[in-house]
Length: 427
Image 1 (cartoon, rainbow, N blue to C red):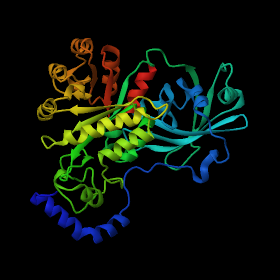
Image 2: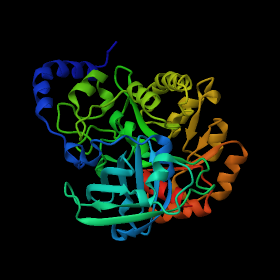
Image 3: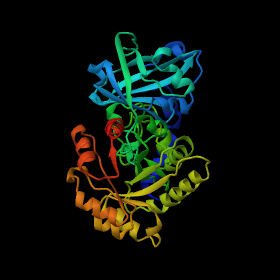
Image 4: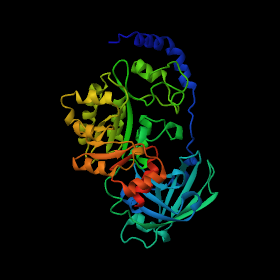
């Protein structure tokens, strides 16, 4: 039952504006970076799709022979979700590829993107029969040389720059060790012109394409007690197109938020239940970091049942990777609310406060800020007490490299999972 004056005002506003906002939402066009696409299906229109076991033969570290100005000297290629992805270090570049084969040739169409700027374009690659295509298609003894060749362009242009690379090695045992690559806000910040707005179901569905095996999502509580995803304290132009609602999103009922608010790239604000349904049923993500943003409002009592249900639903899906959802505890107020729950020690949680508080709460994970350093002694102490350690939010190339080389964290929370993936699998 809605009793507060703010909530009653929001509902009245919702009903009064309903006809106008319906028309407005129909004519508003999405903003953000346009993802280039091949017209008429590109080169894959009449090909047979490659199976996952065929694509796995391409996974590994590759040397770049032609195109180093864009890709650097070496790239990582691996299956990421439903795509084959090339991860390159310069400008946090990634290449998303769909694949197929025709006779004895393997073909790839897709797009490339540099996340530190707005550069993007089409790319077409192929493997000919003399360059390892028979091995990719049929298996057997690995070819001495597997070579990818093709071209890329800027925007919708293609065939402007040549590219060639060859397979060097499989991933090392160190690179194959479990490591959480946690995509911040479900995949990155809206400001970085990612394909979908942050904290949306649409972004969750493609998070694995960026190399992530985990996501962090921000959870708030509507005035009618429905958990939903949104990062900022205010409905603001950073995340939202102009609309009828202003101020804290928690002041409004969920129906008003979902109907009267349009995110930057055209999506609506999802409920936590909708987001978890997508994670469980449409991804193979292994870990979800539920960052609690609403303090002292009963949010935990609404989130925990959804958390436990999602993990149980994931366990019931044959061949799905195990899924762990953790209550993220970023502040003392949330911590106090959490430990007041009698069964809190059995609820998976991740504590961003001190290691001592993580231990007292029986947290599964301790998550210090990256600016505090590698904290090697504290991380080792956490592991000795059965608590994993991840750090947030790690985006800088040099520090990613340093923390992998000299630290012992079990994962990184990052806005650039593609860059972390490159470093992790290059080891």
